[in-house]
Length: 171
Image (cartoon, helix red, strand yellow):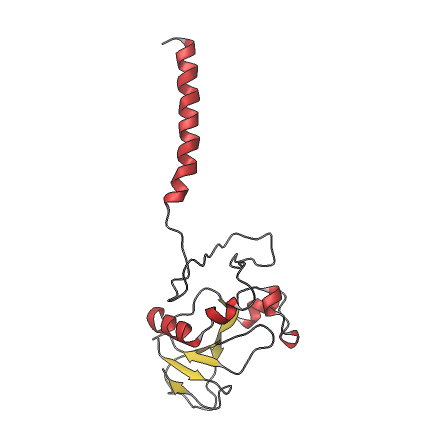
């Protein structure tokens, strides 16, 4: 082999490697929240340059959080997966990232995120006394939080309250 042939082989090999590296990532299946009725919503954990560190903000507008927190979608997800969808964030984590409950600024600080995953104490004993419970906002519209919540356990049992824990309906 001549030097010219060696150089050409190296150049073509490098071009092939670059093309292959660009092509392979497009073959990977893009992840989503695996939430029923919500298609094409991507979750990227590496967008640290914005106020949205989880990378889930999109151009659908503020009312998209209403779709994400629709009670039917969230309840079905929790029953199936025994946990909340990834777009839920605890109160403590949201506060660390700039949320101020009194200002109702969650949509501005953390677009397309909802409050959920904190422990629910069941002090009034309105739910069965077995295991730990967790709470999550549902039917959320930007601004201050409403009175609608679900309470669930790790077994996938879900209770709905639309009056801030005064009464519950098993789902």
